[in-house]
Amino acid sequence: MKINSSIWQAKTFALAIFLSLSASHVAAQDTDGPLSIIDWLGGEASTSSGAASNPNDELSIDLPVPSGGSVPDVTSEPLNESLEDGAGIVSAEAAQLPDLLWATSETDALVAALSQVPSDLTGEARDLFYRLLLTSSSPPLGAGTEGRWLAARVDRLIDMGALEQALALLEAAAPTQPALFERWFDVAVLLDRPQTPCAALQERPSLSFDADKRVFCLTRDGDWTAAVLTLQTSRILGEISDADAALLTAFLDPAIADTLDLSPSGAPMDPLEVHMRRAIGQSITVSNLPVAFAVQDLNGEAGRAAQLEAAERLARTGAIAPEILFSILTSSPNIENAEGTPDIDPYSAQIIGALRQNLAVRDHIALGPVLQDAWATAIAGGFGHAFAKYWGAELSLAALDRDASELVRELYAIIGYFTGLERSHARASGARQRDLARIALGQTPLIAVLPAQQGVTSGLNRRTVDPHIASLQAEGKIGEALLVALAQLGDGKDGNLSELSSGIASLRGLGFEESARRVALDFWVGI
Image 1 (cartoon, rainbow, N blue to C red):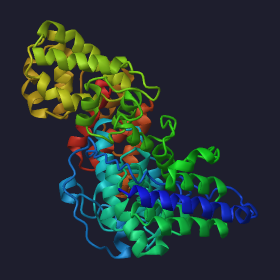
Image 2: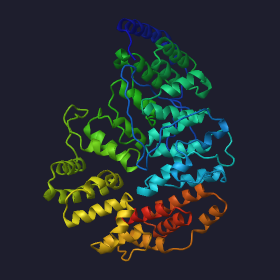
Image 3: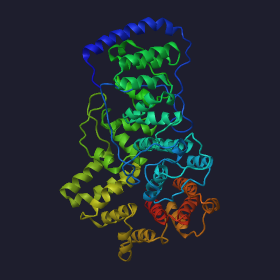
Image 4: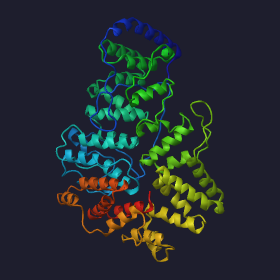
């Protein structure tokens, strides 16, 4: 937003006078600190106190869909309030899921089952989880008009940092409930795309009575005078704390920011506050905040080290596509940090950069060892699945030594190139390779050394399904049963081999044979 400098100066002077005139009155107000902040990682949304973005510096970050697959172009149309809970951005057919995914389950039961699925799933299990969260279907039983099931799904997307997906899901639902609007607004602010929720708030003020949001949206729309009046009125009425008012004032008039007490309140920062503090030039570290905040460091403005850390954090949860991760890891390390000095790339970026360089110059002698190191780094960093998806096809065309060639076969296994594995079953060069091929065929591997491999073998051998999942399946509650199976796989990732075995067998029993095989391959390889 561009503002004529003379007009801005005049308004700045007016603001300073206005603040001084009302200061004594505001000081007399009995304030109890900032309004409650949205509990980002669960629970009901509450009124948020926070901040706005710099009106003169618009940032747009476009993130891809999760590594769980492509999400088609989103088309939204007005929904009846009772249908918000069934909103999605991909059809059940495209997601290869049943049409009545949630319809026969109670909302309370689904919310409870969803809460048991961990956010650190990897590979195929995580991809299936994304599909469940994003698929449109009939609302569950007892959905009502509060949008509780939609809110629960959005919260899990936020929990994993999948903000693009969360925003698309919310906009497809066109939220009419304040609790959903809170989430919509916060996600849009983190992505610096608040235009749509701001327009919705202007059209329907009952969506939120948070003064911070009103001031923010008025400022984004260029209505500076209304923003100042709203801020002052809110202070007089005690609707906003002195700390939040000072921060908003600094945002409205950066020229007087140095004269204000902008000390953090000590409460957890919400998206609006982080956005505003950065907009007025404060250095805010988000590495200690929930992963959803990491998106703000992807543009590199906070330094190369912060950018790399953000990319790896988001890649671990599948929130960004492999293309984004490896574009950042292999980009030129010429971004300065907050102190104005060049950052030195961590080893993960150095070894991935070396892999790309050796592939580009076809240095096949050096490529094998570099590939081994790069793969070990990806596994240790928690982005092995992204590595396999991004590099697998290209590496399959390179001339490699025997060890590196076998590793490429494992990458192919992870990304689901089953046909090649099946055809190569007879000529697999070693026991590990033969077992990979057997798993791709849905057969039991022959040699299970590691604990996870023993759990995989047990799961592929099982012919019965967990009794609870069998009961859900009999009642047609397939979506709920899949959530329970994913929770079992999460426990399996933490070392519970019985749950790992049950999770794999449950996927097969529910008719998700390909997913079961891919999950088995993921655990077998160790990502």
